[in-house]
Length: 360
Image 1: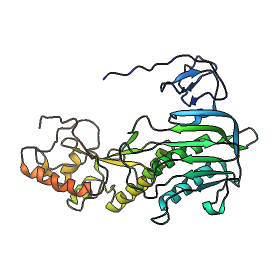
Image 2: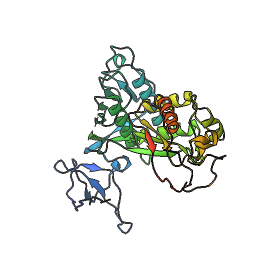
Image 3: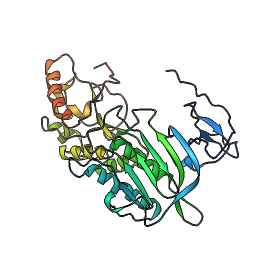
Image 4: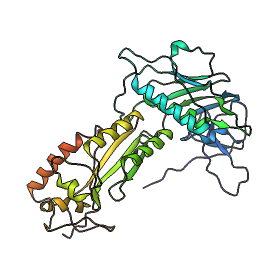
């Protein structure tokens, strides 16, 4: 694997319209660590010597113009959707999104926010106005439009996005910008951000096979992912140490291979919807043909050496593997994947394929 070299140069030309990004990678030997600046001519970061509140924002915005002021927030602050397309009825997904970020703001600042409709609020209010015409929340897809623009003046802020995914990313940036000064006054800096992701696949993998995690823990991780704009949760759902999804077609998979620690179909549907509301895809992984000891506890005939199996309690690459020489193995997998792919709407479905020991 070849690593691409980062082109970094020193730049100390500063002004009120300097473009900053929040990267804070620096040598501990530097007493005044630099932040990173984006210029309009170059998409690669360059160092500047001025500290910046943008260090709170992640990932690095594509383009930031800092202005010389800030917008204060108090208990009159509101988040208001002003241009949603409600031809198909109330946009429940946007409403839930606003309520969720209202809660994030409350947890960060103590400011309780009440929702208002655009018809009852004027632009004179201390508010963040959301401009988006998308009112239907399709399942997120790889490469979808996640861009947004965030304009913050001294009186109010405006968030522009073509999609609800872009709205989510912009709201996350707004909350990350919240700042409390020495007097505990809350504000966000005046600025303009034009942002889009550099990488369309920004994922987190959680191995619930080896380290079981209940639904509440997965929810908590999805909340954190939304806050930092990650968009793919890779769930590792089967391995030698456990099989973690209910199978109605082959119930012995979860009944004997999970220590009674597995997700029901209903819980999977809930997690997929929970992730979708946060504009996050869930990519499942069922590892085959190796790392399948937990499968053989209930269905030993799948193994290349049929015998009595038990769930692995240790770690490593083990001898048991699925037998590719029997047609019944493929018939089993065909039926199993027909069932499980219906649980996960994403176009990607991971089937492992790694570390077959090969001696058995």
